[in-house]
Length: 482
Image 1 (tube, rainbow, N blue to C red):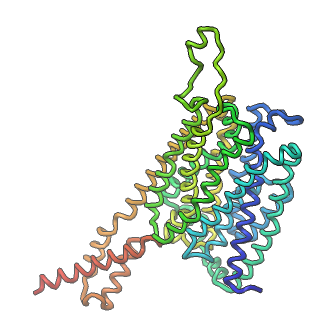
Image 2: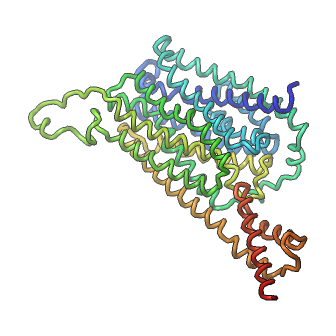
Image 3: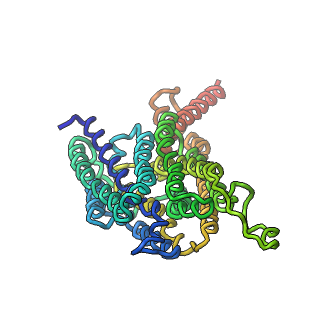
């Protein structure tokens, strides 16, 4: 049996492969929109394809919450393996969202000091599955048609069950050697934990839902839009969709390491989330209405050309303009998507930050469900045959997300602000009788820090501030006495 450090690394490797396999299988339909709409026996209309996309994501609205409740009862690792077994049995859409979020419940306690950096690493490997999908699916389609193009990602997705079972065994062996079992015994009642979630958490959910709602449907309609508006072949359009997923694979690991090294507070992460999401609506609008030749926005045919009785000349494909817009979209999504999972463990009150608790797994379930809500609803309720209008809808969703993250950041700042009034209240209620660094001083310091209710990232700063307040109050009293 490997050492505890080796088992933790093996656990990460198992989860990473599972995420890679799942994302390849999940995104395979997005790379095959045109074949699904044109090849027998499918021959789907655009409306039916949009409905299929909604049905594909629909179970993901409720399944993550169910997974969180089951993880609360049976443990996150066991639930993770069970959902992979369901996916391997053929119902991939049931396991699609659950397997993405459940590892947080049993991997994060093993890597408390480097969790944000690990999120970046897992995010990068996760998105490599999508990159592989858009890279290989056109080749598989040319080699064997739809049967081969759909069978290979299905087999890869099913293979994730083996690593999920191994991750379950490794987690069980680690749990016997650490405090995980004791922590589970002390967890809060589920109903009490949910009632204590702050407004910042729900604004965070809305922002994350808009991140996924603005970008995920693009994977399923983007290839066809690029082909029809910019005259690209299928392979070129799928290759262009590699940019956003590839940016996540490149950006996520170093960005996660940076957040860990700099100890970013929740407020800073929320402001960065808003700033990262802001370019996405702009990129979507450019892709929706940019002229086929990369010129000015083309909202309709040229009036002079039509008056002369001539048809508009076919425009040669111009890859530069859509490539730049897709790159901007992918870069913004890479930062925003990574910030969702890196901030999840900070967005609830400190009393709910026990990463092994059922409250955490249910919080993860709520997050997973909210992220899949808009990708499930938008194609069915708002998408039509005009892909430019569909992208405009996605841009509007992204704008709502920017507002939600900005509001959450303001709320988070306001939540941290009452430290000095609280310090003054505690100081006035319990006069100091000893010099700084004495027993009375340490008791007062503990009271101030507890009153401030700091989160892990800003606990050190608040302790310094509280120490300064108490010390200044003592010296001021001494000065008056002399």
